[in-house]
Image (cartoon, rainbow, N blue to C red; front, side):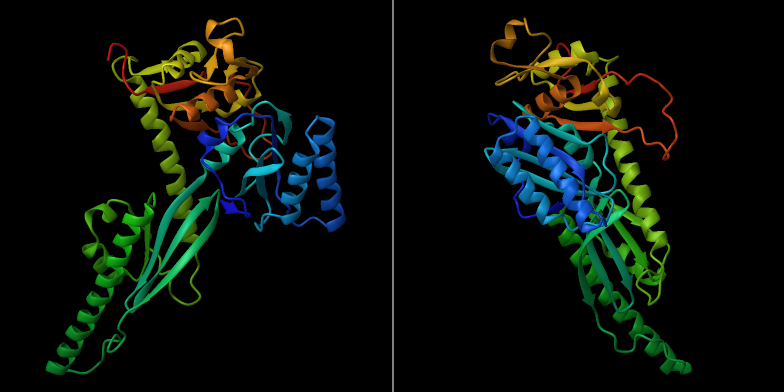
Length: 380
């Protein structure tokens, strides 16, 4: 995620604020010629004006887009604007998920934001060698990495094992091993501190084989449980990061898949008593603030199904005539209404993507029903 100068506020706090809102989800600046980029931005602001967005909102969007996002192409920009101010401005590496969004209305669109945020995974890379290590705090964004790197340089005297003979040879060998152990103890201390303070999802350990072994022996249990070891000496001069990048991509996807599988398992516990399935049951659970994790098929964003958004708790209703709908903000696309109510009631939202190779047609399956794991089971 890239911060373009506007501090991102907590999403639940934003959603509780009254509208109207202007929502923009567009491709990042990329490498287009300046004239083409100016024409594209003019098309965005003209469309927003045609949709009834106030001039102050349109100017705020134009100013934000003029600043750019500083990310390589392709990238995605998400703006939520209220009262002439971009109160949320986030950029993501990677192609846009779903269609372009240019809207003005009583509520912001948040599902595109949640879909992109789900792909941002913090992790720590430890590229270790006998003389020290390079520690990089990273965020995975669909195959790209933002990094914050720290170099730990340990002792280097007598690191190269000498080719002397007899007693002298053994003495220098032991001295070198002591230095390696000392250096990796320093690295382990730094890794443990970063795990405690920055809470990465996983820790990739790469580098010299013996240095990796010494480091793993010295890590705290909490850090060791997050380790993904990569058999590559990435800190060596001229080394290829391909193995590291592949391992990170697999770990990120495995982590997302595990979260979705865990939520499904929890929803199925007790013969389904710990879950809610389908629009009716999920809406009822959200109204009672019982939802722990909401699972949404990304294709639900294209559904014509609508629900009613409310301006206060319980935030959502099935139909305009419901007695709960006294504070109705009107019909809202169903997936958006569900995601909004989930965020406002403190639930997690996980979006199940349907990634297909470019140009490959979808199989025509209808989207899966919404599914929720609950904070307490029926009768609990």
